[in-house]
Length: 108
Image 1 (cartoon, rainbow, N blue to C red):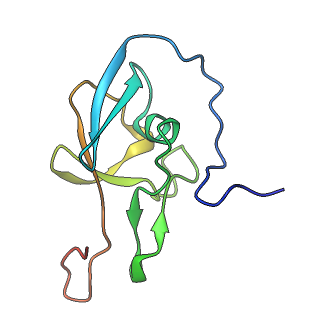
Image 2 (image 1 turned 45 degrees about the vertical axis):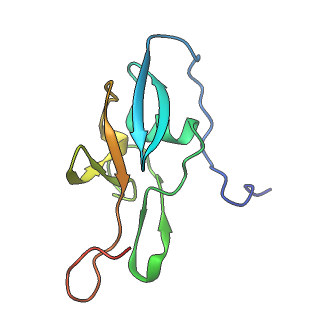
């Protein structure tokens, strides 16, 4: 048993109801439900790569409880935010993060 390429090991158990909020993820409009954490909302929208590590290795949520730091994103201009620990709000602007290059600057 495996996951489809680019798929996610997570499956929502929450009903899809509630007030809709609107987000931007790398310039793409995304909708989520009020009360969702950001990682869950992005996964529900089919976004599984949240950042890149060294050598452009893709990274995305793993633990969903704030331990692993694989879900780091930039939110409203603030880098290094744990998507699994942030509750969505209307109008958020989220960007994938790139790992710093050897000079300490974000690549990509």
